[in-house]
Length: 251
Ligand code: FES
Image 1 (tube, rainbow, N blue to C red):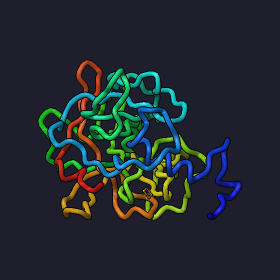
Image 2 (spheres, rainbow, N blue to C red):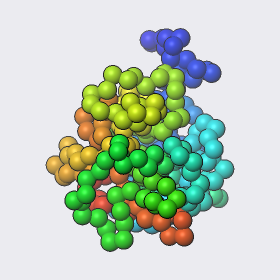
Image 3 (cartoon, helix red, strand yellow):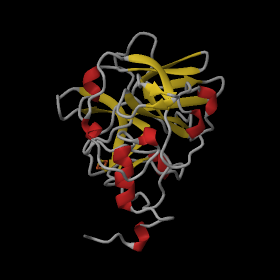
Image 4 (tube, rainbow, N blue to C red):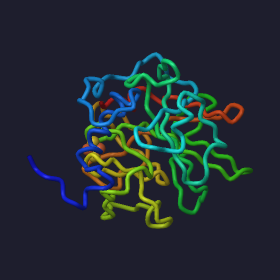
C-alpha cells in the first residue's frame, strides 16, 4: 500500500483520510464518524420531490463554527464576509441530526460583494421569486449556494476547511477568488478539483447534455462547473430551489 507523504499529513490527517471523509460526509456524517466504510449512500440519488425550501445546517465532521447549528435554518446574517457552511435542502433529520444521504447537500458561501470581479449570467430562467444568488446591496451581503457534489467523482467539496494538502494554484483559467483576494476556491480534496464562487459560468452536464450555471471549474480533474441552487431569503432565512432537476443529476 502506498504511503502518504509527510507533506500530506496534518494533525494526523492524510489525504486518504480526507478522501474517506469526503465520501462519508454524505454517508455517515450524522454519526460524527470519520474514516468509516464507504457506504452505498455515496451514489444515492437525491429525492426528486423536494425542489425548494429552507436550507438547514449540517454538521461537518471536523470542528467548524456552524456545527452547533445543525438542523437550524441558515440565515444570511450568520455569515461574515467569506465565511461558508454546509447545509441541505430537503434533508431528513432525526433527533436534530441530519440523516446522511437525504436531500441536496449544499455549500453556502458569503462572497465579496464586488461587481468589478464577480460575474454571473443574467439570462437564466429561474423559479419564480428566486435568484441565481442572494444579493443585498443595503447590507452589502452576497451569498452563493452551491450543490456540494464534485463534478469529478461526486466527493463533497469544501470551503476553507482543508489547507493541507494545500490546493494547487496552477489554475486552468481565471480564478479571482485567489488571484484577487488570496483565498482558495472551493476545493475537493479527493483529487484537487476546484471551483471559483466569484465566477458563475454556464457549463454542460456531461450526463444529460443540459446546460447549467455554477462556479467555474478552475482546477481539474473535474472537467466542468458544479451547479448552483437558486436562492431567496424569507425573514433572513435562506431558501433554495432547484433551477432544473437535471442540473443535479450526475452522481
Ligand atoms: S471527486 Fe472531487 S476531485 Fe475527484
